[in-house]
Length: 83
Image (cartoon, rainbow, N blue to C red; front, side, top):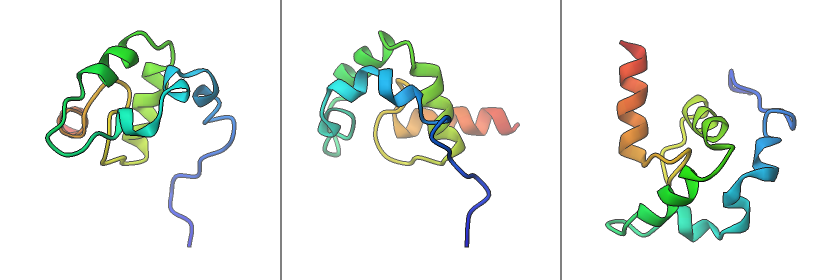
């Protein structure tokens, strides 16, 4: 069964030019309790930050730094958007 959100290659094109493509996943998915500061700094300089954040929110990404926000920050933003 397919879920309601189907992601196409065009919708993911932002990933090709995102700065995170040049860093390893451990940078954006740190161990619990570790700092996310460096990942957020890299995201802050990335032209694809908004597209990344929108992707994470639309696809309910629950782990890691996406669009410069941590899991908790994305959850807070999502709740604010729903109210």
